[in-house]
Length: 272
Image 1: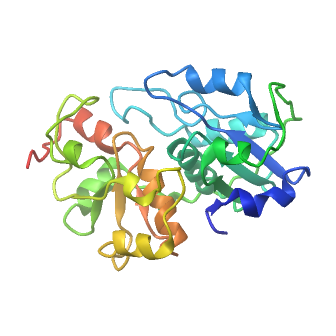
Image 2 (image 1 turned 90 degrees about the vertical axis):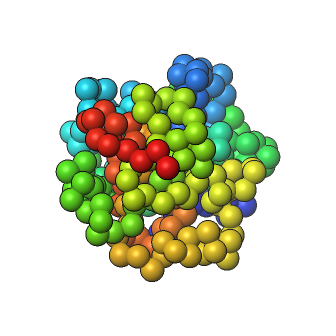
């Protein structure tokens, strides 16, 4: 299934019960923003997935700033929201990255019918479809997981493969080069990594760029077998993962702990 959808293609289904909507809005600088925005106004029938409480696990000494939830916790989240493996899930945020993280988690558990709404909530609003402040409830479900662990690379696996495969840093170029580092205690990047800023895959209105532009952006990555992607904490790298999936490049792997996990382990990093 193609990983994203345009509102123009989705609108025929909006008024039916065939869609399970999830609002993934979030702001790293204002952690309460997403939940508050959801409570104020959201797609009719949508439930909320919070980056910190739903799409991440507890922070520890290692694992990064947004470690993955455990398999059990993520399965429990879906069951508490009444999701079944047959549901057609549509994810949205204000742009793309947080919905992309949710998409990755759905794919990880083996959910086939899941897409990110291109253009986010604003693209939904542009079609004048219903919004509400009512919070829906669904009967809990029993979700049978089929975890796709080949999508994931651990810290130990990454260390062993640094010289054997391509590693892609999805952060902004100045962070990659170590010129600034607003979040982690060491500036730089994982040794040998190349830079491919995730925002290059998106248009200003939060949509994937067209296929030809993406093929040009990823020209050096597409021929590589099972490349590894990371960012600061395993969130924005998921934009590059989705964009590559849109081109049929589905063997990409995520280092979920990303740079914040790498430096927490005392590893040497490049400052070049």
